Structure formats: C-alpha cells, structure tokens
Length: 432
Image (tube, rainbow, N blue to C red; front, side, top):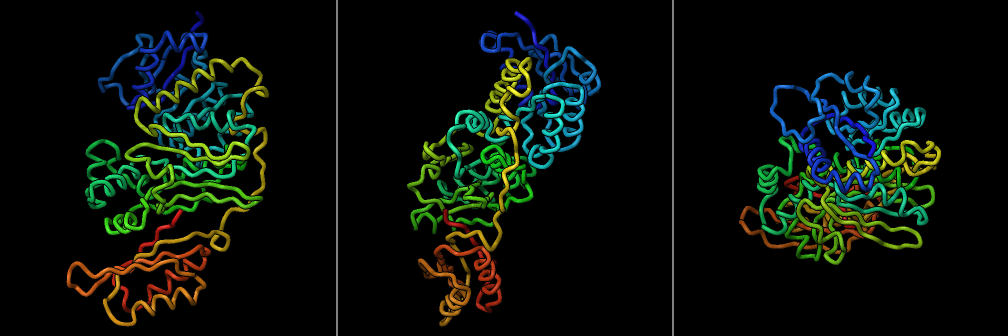
C-alpha cells in the first residue's frame, strides 16, 4: 500500500495522542484512507525533552524549514496553539503547496479569513474539525450532513472548563473559587484560565460555527461576550429554586439579514436538553429548516478526542488531495462566503434577565428599584426577596425581567448603580 508522509507542528498532549492513535490503529486507518499514514517530522521547541516515540520514521526538529523544504511531506498538522508563530508557519506551508490540518481555534477566529483565502488561491486544503468541539464531528455535520437544511440557530456548550466549574457549584454547593481550584487540580483548566472563564475560548469557536453555518465572513470582532467570573453560589441556589440551572452558552442565529453571535452564562430551564450536559462535556443544539432540532454531544477537549478529529481530517486530505479543488468540500462550507448580515447591537438584541442586587434592608428600597425598571420600559416577571441569613442589614433581591432590549437593560444597570441602597455590584444573567 502506498505511503503518505505527514509532519506535526507541536508534540504536547494532542500531538502525542495523534501519534499514538495513528500507530495503534494503523491497520484500520489505512483500510479507510487507502494509504499508510506515517509521521516523518515533528517540530518541537527543544530537542532535550524526553518524549514518547511511536514512529521510528519520525525525526524531531526545531527548524520549520526541514518541513517546508521536504517535498515528500504533503500534509502538516498544526497543534502547537497560539497565534504566532503558528500563523506564519501555516502561511508558509500553504505557499509551498502543502495541505494543513489544525486545531487552532484562536488563530482561525482572529486571522482565519486571510489564511483560508491563501489556501484557496494555492488550491490547498485547510481542515479544522478539532478546533471547535474536540471529538464531536460538528464541522463535517454542518458542512455536509446539513446541506439541505438551512440552519436557523445554534446553541451550544463549547467550553468544558466553564461547564465543569458551574456543574461543581451546582452539584456540590461549593464556591466559584473552590470549583476553579478543583478544575485546575484535575487538569481541566490551564494555569491561567482567563480565556475559559471570560468566554474568549467559546467566542473563538462560535465565530467559526457562525461562518460555516450561515456563509458569513469570519466575524470574531462581532461576538458579544460575557464570562462566568461573577457567578456565585447564591446565584446557583436561586436558579435552582426557580427551576433553572446556570450554563455557559455560546449562541448564534440568523433571521433575515439579522445575525447574533453571543457567549454568556445563562439561566437554562431544567427541561432543556442542554441543562443535563455536565462536567467537561460539550454539546450543540441545532435548529435547522426541515430537520428541526437536533443535538450533538461528546468530549469537547482532551488529547484523544481532539486527536480523533485531527486524524479524521488527515484521512479526508489523503482521500481528496488528488481531486480538483473545485470538487472538494469548500473550506468554509459555502462556495462563496458573501452573505450580507447586520450584526446585533444593543438596540436590536433582547432577552429576559435575572438581576441580583445586594441592598440595605430598609423601607422603600424595593419601590425605588422597581421605579428604575419602569422608567426604562423594562417589565418585571417576578421578584424574590428572602430574609438575610446573617444580621448585617444586607439582603439579596432577585428580579426576573420579561424580554427587554439590551439598550434598556444597560440603562437599568447604570441607573441602579446610582441608588444609595445598593451595596455590591449587580449580577445580571440572561435567561435563555
């Protein structure tokens, strides 16, 4: 059987898992690909570190030129992460006519349009199944399986770290900091978890989903992002009492020419299928014309789940690299990424909301709060007020609003901050 030589850029958790699976499942993968896939070069930052060896054919190198100038290497897998030097390396590889598989969602969300335009010009494939939902093959599903069904809306849990933290807070009644510490000790979060907590990681992923679902240009700067850092155990308990669970959602939808791309913690009703997606798991809930609502669930991160998606892309390149570029599946699902949309603004976006205020326990406080909402045309669905558990004179007031424009809610938040009775920052969580 003919051999295909590939190279890896990076040999951390995912890179090592790719090599292990390619070696362990070599026979099955070859039967599917029609060719033997072997690793010839692996780019690493240092040659001193001791590493697992799965291919005797593989040479470790610190010089990208050894890969760029090797004409026998036709496919390169980028799993080094980060923007630079990954962007420069991928561009150089494409210029050399090589095909690229990447798991780098940050790079694709922030610079992907330029790189994909280059790949089109050079007739190179650039595949990125592993960049969005780890082991869930959602890119192929959207690109190919849902061709006949225009997608209206995607609601997803795309960050396992954030989901694990909120799950621990819900199931074990622990604080945010304690849940974060557990997440890090188990290896589910980076030493610096800011991208996960602030919603940036999920924003990169939902950006790419919006592009392949709707045929719009990659639009990372249009994502409206809120993180989970301000969620407290008090919010978790109130959500539970109201029949909700708090989940880290990523959402995108189109209606006519209006398009919204959002990342935010949400009160999700217990009856919703995504409410039961716990721990580090990911899931996507898609509403498409003709098909209706479907859900895709699985491991969104980790070495082997991510490597599985990478290898699926490698096999796709092996099968299709001799096919004329016009007859391949388009890089971003559509032959032309030119759909004109108007992205959501504070004036067009609306939602129901959960507001938690910590206020002085005084007569007239509730009246002053409700007056602020009335002044800004925000209707109240419900108000909850409990007696303080400790006698410090501070009580939580929970307000559930009806659907309201983002502009109005922003003004409500601003006006409430001016009330002398307010003792802490206001917590606002959208209700899905």
